[in-house]
Length: 170
Image 1: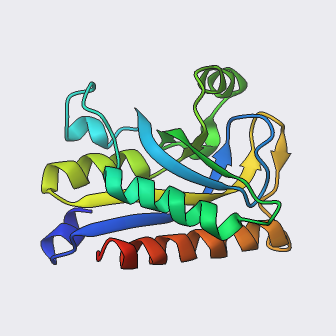
Image 2: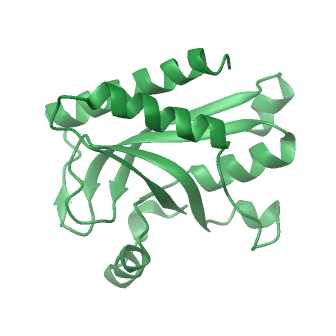
């Protein structure tokens, strides 16, 4: 984010994979972030622990709208909620996963908190849409290159991000 800001980038949308933390979210379902619980080390170097890690509202809402349009008539679902950012993504234990799920945290990934905090501090716009690759509550690890639902989710999330860029003239 720092380097992107220095070369003149004004908006960033993270697209990728994320692990679900709520029951019933399936591989390929789309996850749109409305904010991130900061459980990383990077953001502490930038801001007070109470400083929120939130996306640009217009980007988040347009990503949601584009995602809903793209999955209309399919078996894919779209979820909009607060995610957690852990910089030790594969180190979450069962108690941590359970506590996040009980808080209603939608999913966990590794980048958005730092992206949101640095974007806010540098006057940039940021958002995130991911395809669900696994569900840590249901115990389903679905990160498999042969998984067509996941591939479809990636394609839809990329298309939603591109459509948002066009719609918002980013």
